Length: 556
Image (cartoon, one colour):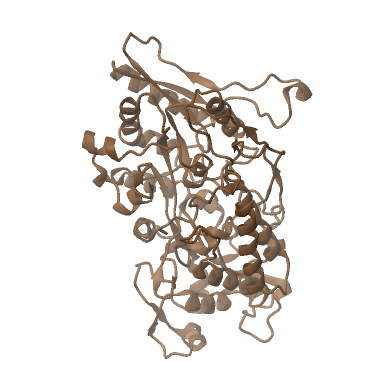
């Protein structure tokens, strides 16, 4: 099972210089892990390069025996694949260089179009998943005479560099995936607009929520269609609320919170009063739910922040952009192309920072990064010592250790609007494919008849609504005996509250024509690490400097 990377861990990502091919150039750089800046080799000005995907996060809870996170999330070295790792050179390790698993049609008659499916920029390289992928390919090839699939499955650790090499050699595949939105930005501008093919074939997009379809629009181009989606929700421990006599958070979007007992007193309202379910209310509840070793909560003058037994709240903190997106959609790029920091993101970061270092209801950085004795799963809610946590549905991979009485609720609002930050994976068609019609035929198959087998193997929530009941049943069964069923409708409802534009939106090229995505995210990670571990900072000044740093990167 994949594990998240600690934010302080610095990962080295090798950059491959790419040459121009087919009259176009590949993108300059890929997004790095959200937990640490990339240490890259020097590159020639203007030469595009490829690197690893955006975020370092845990995998989804898989109903099958193998869990695999969204393709926009980075698996750890524990992820096994079809080939040995190249973390050390073959010469140094004495092992042969890894080779991809190739699933080729047995025979191809003249005139038959072969569509190359490239994997694995995220999920898909585990041997058990490759077994399912082979079956999916063989089933398609057995039932089609005019189009055949040839699969190429590369271990995640080599997948970006291998793909970059193929592109540089003028030999890109036709379909690539599953890949997340952030990972796709490694090759921004090189994905086929599917809308003409959707129109000409009459492909039915109504089988997906319209908001999920819109998620894959870049300007007027429909660069993808929903396959695996990861809405976010608020996880909470029922017993923590019952123990102090306060109501649980509302499950319905748009519903208010009913304050009783200590919550009503802390909010200065009469018992039974409805108050907005927003981050102000969440902060009050989180402080009541944060308890030290002497059972004093964080509102008590006797509270000891050095001996906290239970925290009240934990945000999704793998990416500062994602953390901000829970407070409202936004982008770092202003309408004139300059760097900006959306106001909701600024408010979210200051709330988070104060929650760690002033109010003490959020896990501080040192404890969060202690993956030996306190946070082994990388998701503090899973250790049973956090009462509430916002996170994506892929974070359920470790909830079997979170106890038997948790549930999910709607995320709090900011200024009256509830935003559930959104992740999604899909298969994309390379812009310059020689066989767009055949590739779209294969894409329809992967999103349709094969979607059930593949999403189950990947441990992903299906975008296709008809597959979800079985997904949620298998997911809940994987947790063992729970006191009450989980209200999975909350996750489904969150789809309509996804952040648009998505927080992983593309970032500019600099004046030298280089994609700045990787370097920009690395700069954000530097600030995230500092905020996690340093008290007494002036966040307004920090945010202003961050904006200046981003602009400097884009001006190079």
